[in-house]
Image (cartoon, rainbow, N blue to C red):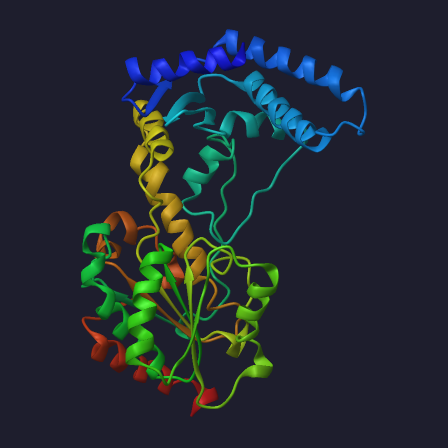
Length: 372
């Protein structure tokens, strides 16, 4: 019965969708009844015990279907559904457009809740998504770190949009080299995708073989991640050694790592971090646009800038840290992005070319008492 239902969904994709996808704001009660029947039938089989030859596969399938049923019970105007067809495969998904209502219900089970992070910006956006209300307290604390310990550079002459990326590889490689050349130490360069990162890394390695280069790989094991980070250990630092790690923004090295002091002295962030254009992001955008809330900002701009802030936040970790951040993208000069810069990112030093980057950093590092 469930297979027949999915066959009907496939026809919906062809007749009412675009041939690949069909979106519906309604959740069929017929589907949920079929899901319920599948669970009851599976439970009867599972009662036979773990001796069943297909026990592991069935128990995994059972819990996945059970999760689907439980999410279906939450379905309301904050959700939508979509069906995708690829060849003979049909995929149906319940998609949450706005988690605020569910989070709010969970919060009401307690007396109070506090959300805190160094990257809860803009506050109103996170308050909306995390189930907050207009009267809830918002508190923004200034950075405890001396502002003169950070040099923020903006290379807004380089375009990193998808259509222009091929023209930017060499410029970015040389901009990274200019940042690194003024001070021995460890650096990280963050990119919006693996392909972009690998293209720039190839050119960087060819032009600067004297600089140690590490490149994040897709699907790295825990051991490989540890080996990558071991190059940034304080014990491994050597005088006049230059090391650059290339990583993907929003990945395992873009947040949750604490490289204090000399372990990291600079970072490059390439691009404004926008999530890839896709169906789900566009559904979120449409949902908020319908409610007269800036949908593109909620679906793309704010999540993207959160990645940027996370990546750049690897540099200054304590009050004694000093470091440089280079932002690379013409869009960072736009007001929609500049207004999202934290106060500690001011002043912003615009740089026009690699020579300008080197000049600005020569001045900055000259005032570093640890290297005079």
